[in-house]
Image (cartoon, rainbow, N blue to C red):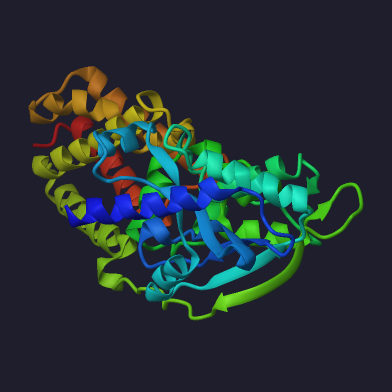
Length: 392
């Protein structure tokens, strides 16, 4: 009840402030705030906001496009399906800054070199965008997020008069490389991204597309100029808060490389024992077929049953074959069907294709999976030999 009262009170104050006038004073400043990485995966890529400061009108607000409601109906289902709505939010600047100081995240500010008309156009756009009927938008990690919205608002306010120049010796990077710049490769978050997202993110991003990351908003805005007069877009840059949160370190013994490396050693040890005894440990094969099949089914659902564009053309299906779930019954037969041996050869060919795709850059795969993939291939080869020799 108290939260609702506070929200209502703030909303009344906000509406009262806007109802007076949306005309800014000549000394008003509009700036871009860039927030550094946080400790969680969700915060690892940083954040952006727009600050509207007008001392003459006692106005100092931040607008950002990173708000979402965990309590919204079907939140997790909509997230999985790629139909999650984000919203523009507004806060008093010092409350906004206090929050990120509490999180120990760096805050940089770039004051924009805008005309009075451009300032008022931008401000009025944000005010209108914050209205309940306008504030929601369909989130897309690469093309419509808290950073790309900043670029879009600036283009609207300036009537596309800004040219975003890229740094000298700039070399475009793939979307996957840009993501991994913000992550430790040997973490579960990094592995999950590499497994869930397809080869479409292994294409090189254009210079403008680099701005899906907040840090590149800061980089490209710093070099941006107006097309008509080549004046810089940013007239002043400063660091508001300079304390960076120390990156949380995951114990190596809990990391993907160690866990999958240990799993790979178990697979290889059991396979060696089976080879020596000319015996097949069925329980291991069932675990491998269930694991790869379930992961493969999840990848297929992300590809074909959601609106996520980044999950398309995912060649992790070359090792996580969903068909494995349909052939598990053959593992329980003393003499499997003749086609099952051919199917095992097909699985080996798929792993060879994965190696080819990886080596020529069609898609990059999670390094943490490498020991497991090697062990999986060896197990498949053993099964082919085992069934041919009719081992028990």
